[in-house]
Length: 339
Image (cartoon, rainbow, N blue to C red):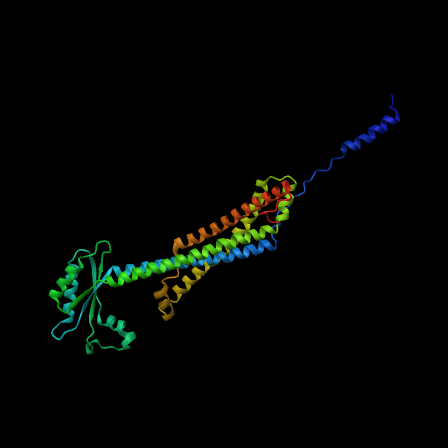
């Protein structure tokens, strides 16, 4: 029995419809709420980079001054000097050896070294010129004694014994120089710490105002998101993420430049040793290496700047939303609310 033509047409039309596949639904990729880069964001990044560089540079400088002052103090306080004046009836070499041996008999002394004629001539060369013959001048000779800083010897007893054995000998424990150096070191570190605090204060104020200025340009985004029903925490989190990225980039650039500066200065200093310029710079400022603690401080400064910018962005957004809600509830109220 044959099927009617109308039924055959229905089957023929139903087969292509079943074979046809539904088009796949594609979700349009969502764009970020805030533009990844704009004028305000780039300006804020530049400001953060500059302030991070200055803050890290000041931090490294204070660290260098502190370590150099501590090195000076340690070098002077761990040595004493025995000075023997020349005399016609004095055998200088024998007196130098005797003074060294007497000093080493005291508890708290480690080693003794006689400064020979060549070394003494080099010490006087900047004032008396090269080719100095010590036999023609009544130049005192020195014995350098290394002592234990934690358990120093009895200086008064040593001084008295040296005076009785060698009348031409005198002991210099550098106590006056150490006291002056300690005072100078503490004053220098205090001044450097004050400068560091000023730089950090300026950095905090600059970053805060720069962040608020950058957010003011995106106020309309906050208003739109809030009007469409976005929660305050969501809006604040989105802005927080955005400004965290900007602050991390800026602070990382500034901190890296400061670390590169100290590394380059330290490398240059190590390559130019024994030159007059490097010797003078080393004598005044010490080595340009800030050490592990210095680089750790630079990294900590970078983190502090990033957190400061992020917290400022969140608080500013929350305040903006509060102002919007206040104006919506009472449009006539404008006291203390930014437009």
